[in-house]
Length: 189
Image (cartoon, rainbow, N blue to C red; front, side, top):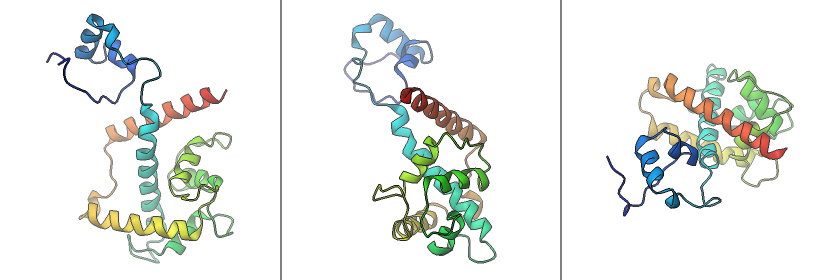
């Protein structure tokens, strides 16, 4: 369908995808009207928009993995924050660091992680680190656990529906995470 020049579209993509044939309608429109492309620097970084979504989903996966690890000690959705914190707190100091999130991504979720590349772990960690001081305290974790318990209870009525992205969803998520990590690493150079 033709692009309506009087309508405001909110498109979550890269500008190059709008002009390289990925979306024929947009490509045709911008070939005819290249001056209407948003000015450089006036874009919303799609990776920055998606990273909170990915971080939340990784916390959900960690939530399930911790629940499964503690299953003999607590109900799936009703493990105490202390029990969950203990699983993530590998050195037993009562707080969760970025390094411990990296270990959890590797050990609990089976992700291939590089000890020298902490971008993903930092982002996942920052999702719960409300104070931004680099550690997740018991109080911060308790607030997060309360939110996760409420979300889990309200969003999922059947256990088999819990946190089960399709293979296609996983590919998209993992691809976007990898691309964001590479982009961040290149920007840091």
